[in-house]
Length: 144
Ligand code: HEM
Ligand code: HEM
View (spheres, rainbow, N blue to C red):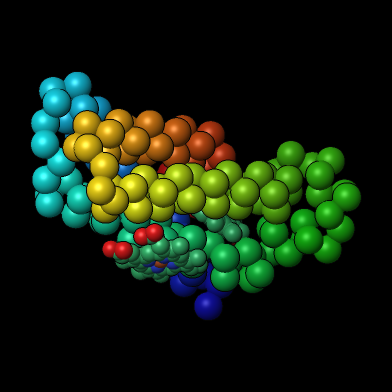
């Protein structure tokens, strides 16, 4: 199960990061051009949300089966002194959950009764920060 989950958790970010970057740029262009917030914009946000939630679910299971996070959890104090163990046990999960929370809030707000301009603005800011958080805490040396 571990290998399967690890492959899935390793492959999904290619899709998630591509769609997130595209949706972020689309929101910025729509905000600056004062475009209406269409059903297409909402669905675009929904695809980001679904990919992010799927990655969250897989990540949460992986956290308890991966040798990286398990050895970190075995001795949390020691793990905090090792940059690689600290990344897998604390920094990566925490930052990713924060990023997914921002993605969820942005999508949620785009369904509310707000002006089209505000929806594009919220999506530009939240998706932009989420993208930075994800990029900052991906274990690059193990990925790609
Ligand atoms: C750890 C697991 C998960 C948590 C904690 C979680 C949490 C949430 C929350 C809080 C919302 C509400 C967002 C709102 O205000 O509209 C939501 C919506 C949603 N989630 Fe998840 N989710 C998880 C897993 C998944 C998975 C695995 C999928 C599908 C692959 C998924 C698909 C969706 C969809 C489609 C919506 C919103 C649809 C809509 O309102 O139009 N989620 N989730
Ligand atoms: C946007 C969300 C996320 C992204 C883009 C992401 C991305 C990644 C990537 C690229 C890797 C490296 C995979 C490899 O070695 O090929 C990884 C590993 C890992 N992630 Fe995530 N992740 C996310 C969320 C989470 C969450 C929420 C958790 C836990 C709660 C988590 C736990 C882990 C663990 C434990 C590993 C190490 C797996 C291993 O090599 O044994 N991830 N993640």
